[in-house]
Length: 145
Image 1 (spheres, rainbow, N blue to C red):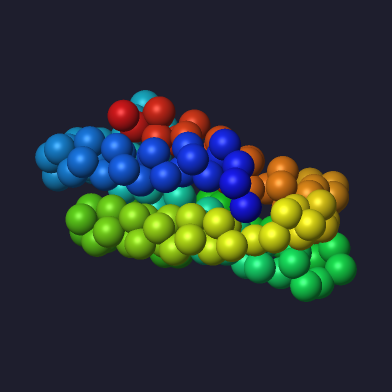
Image 2 (cartoon, rainbow, N blue to C red):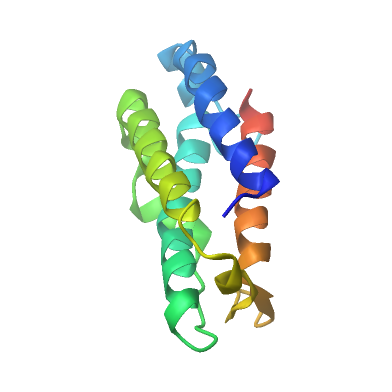
């Protein structure tokens, strides 16, 4: 599958890790805004997104309109991202997304029109969820960079 969103994901994986590696421990642990997550929690959220979207990317190809939702606040809280080592979180985020990029590059074009049911109970195509996944990541990375 050749899509602009996959090119963007590859570019993110090429450029962003070095920038994230520059943050001090204090910067990782300081919320990016009052009452908001810190950088570790944002990267943890992106790991949670990768894990849950991996399931979407695969299941939509063989199940009829699977319902795939996740409670992002609870995933973040009970994954204890705020207590994890920032380097471990960064390595995990890189590894998950490197794998997902390789997976997404193999999906046949015909599979992109298959549908699943998202968090709002609305159907979405696999093509949409792939694009939305990268847009969502880009949004959160801009918050912390």
